[in-house]
Amino acid sequence: MQTEGRWARWLGPGVAFLASLAIAGPAGADSHAHCEGWFPDFSCERSGRWEGFHRPIVAPYLFEDPFITTGVQAYHLWHDFPERSVFQGGDLHAFAVQARVALTDRLALIATKDGYVWNRPDLNLLDDTQGSMNLAGGVKYALLVDEERRVMVSPALRFELPTGSSDTFQGHSDGLFIPSVSAAWGPGPWRLMGGFGSQIPLDGGQQSASIFYQLYAGYELTPMVKPFLQLSGITWVHSGDGKLPVRLKSGGTIPLDAAQSALGTGRFDGADVVNLGSRGVAGQDLFTWALGAHVPFTEHLTLSLAYERPFSHQKGIFKQRVTTSVGLEF
Image 1 (cartoon, rainbow, N blue to C red):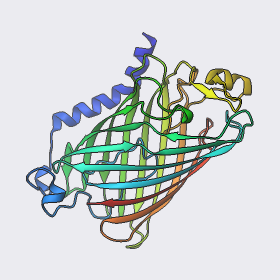
Image 2 (cartoon, one colour):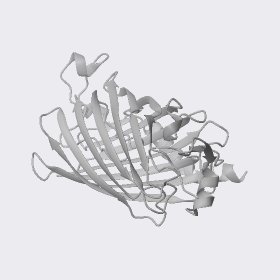
Image 3 (cartoon, rainbow, N blue to C red):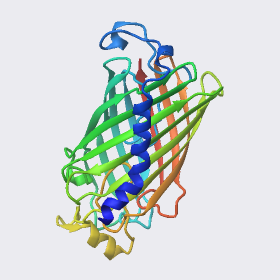
């Protein structure tokens, strides 16, 4: 009953928000440039993303913006671990590609998580590892579109499959549901976006459950340089069982909970890249800020770069991160 009350407390406002949008319906849709038929980006001239808006690249596995587009986005993440963590320093490199296809001008298929990871901890007991990440994808629908007022709201539903490598703390449990909703608003030279969602494990308690939220503010500084600021947060609302095996350099394994206790690092989970299923993380928060810029080479090709650091007391395995992305979008 306590767990149910916690979920009601955190998810209640989000459910109520989605319900209010559903009741309101697609108000203002008439002002949206309509394109009849399936696969509109391939069959007619259509701009799925409004002028001046660019895809957020910070927390790319969680933050799905509201625009219905077709394209691919390649990412590189360099993630630095704190010295006071279960890894005792070190870093992670990840390469990934996201893909999206607009089925109609309102509905899109989205593939938002994949890639390959190199994990290089400084702790002598742990070996360097590498492997594939889990796969995640789903659908996104533009529920509210008002191009005249520059307002768009889109819910999305994704599922993360446990297909990744256990060497990179992926591929365990039964997967995750990731419902979310995002909105965009473009007053004057500012481009504002926000997102809210949750990660709901299907494994009966192996993984941790969380809610996440983002606020993005971009500015039209020059035609070729578009700086932005993003605030991101995760709140864990249910802990895992702490039994995720951590592979040792000697060839054996040790449960994550035992490793955290032995090293005195406290309880923490894996931020936005991996769900470690740690014990004792319910009620913890991780907040980060990021500064970056978009550089559009052409109408469809954009380079983006962001530097990110945590500002919450709880940092877990997050010291700093640099995200680089190249996107081709229609």
